[in-house]
Length: 293
Image (cartoon, rainbow, N blue to C red):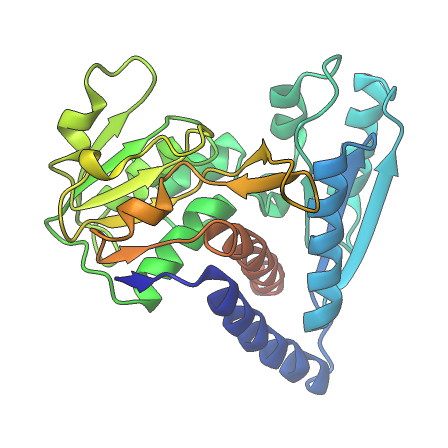
């Protein structure tokens, strides 16, 4: 069994980007500038955004944090998105999800300029991804593809089972794993909450990508020997014996599934760090695309 170490791989990617940024500076070019929009004070969102800002500083990007009140109206937020779209200093920006319940997330994401949509959520970018055109890939699926490639995990002709059909992870993963080229060329089954007898699919899978958010859902008796397991799930599970009072758990019963797997991602330290690294890579791409225009 080999760990797909997302933490180390993400640091390698950030180091590679930092070298490119230094070269841009040396050539007198403007360095990439990423903004993050945070509405309210959700604890997890604050942590994620803070990590993104620190990563920008680490590699030499410019970064801007736009903090907005929890009770901001949808109209006011849309006006702010318009300002960011028109700000020529910004190469890309993200709106941290989830948003407060009184705001329509889809309406906000649709309002983002596709050329600045470094999260890769806009339908324009999603469509380009499906057509295998150059675009911003959703950061988490992009990170998974990068892990598979850097660890030379064989994907061509393999049976990949994706558990979960969200627009952020499951559905884009099913598209990316079936596209031509490496990593890809896989035969994909997309399963979800309405799929009957999921274990019938997982037992025959060469690669399993699970993004359910159900702790320890995937058990050892649901997989075959030599399977590749990508665990996107991340859930806080109460644990009074732990100093923090909780532990972070993935969708996979890691202790037992890892005994059968050829490759597996840990939680934490697997897919999570890769998401931020690929967001930075998308921002670098946004800068390059802007220059080419």
